[in-house]
Length: 216
Ligand SMILES: Nc1ncnc2c1ncn2[C@@H]1O[C@H](COP(=O)(O)OP(=O)(O)OP(=O)(O)O)[C@@H](O)[C@H]1O
Image: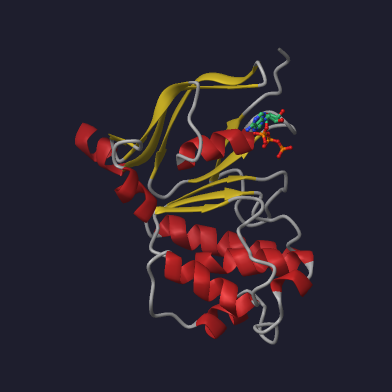
């Protein structure tokens, strides 16, 4: 039983403390995330949600504490962790001077994939007809969809998503919720920040990690 529990844990945060500009955002924060979970990091503006997500992704170091992926410190198994990690920041890494299609091709190739149906994926995120449009000329929601398209072609188990619903319309939010559920069902996990309520992923499914705004 104990072994089963350990095997299912994907990500562990151990006593994380984060300090920015002499303000403690959170301290000694610990939690475990298991395969199949969809987790929302919630809290007011400036409470440290993005900072926590970046620490979980290994993009910044905590003041104290560690992050473990499948029981190993992510600073020691960096390559294995990166292979299993899909991080989408709120700027989302879309290059404005490339087309939607070129952006997706580029992002999938640097993630190590060489066979994929770019146009098919773009049509799933409602960008059919916009494949050759420069990302800089797309609407805010279409720009965001260009970044999110990667979720439709990935083997990564850990999805860390900063405000994935920003600028996305109601139907698009529902489509994203479905893909999150499918990913969780396959044994992955989704950890996201969002201020938006979801319609399909209800409180019975969603796990919340709450941060509070702390004064100095
Ligand atoms: N690299 C940094 N250097 C200095 N201060 C930072 C840095 N990153 C974040 N901060 C500060 O830490 C605080 C928390 O920022 P963070 O982006 O994590 O909050 P958030 O909860 O994601 O906010 P929001 O809901 O507005 O996106 C802010 O006051 C921010 O100015």
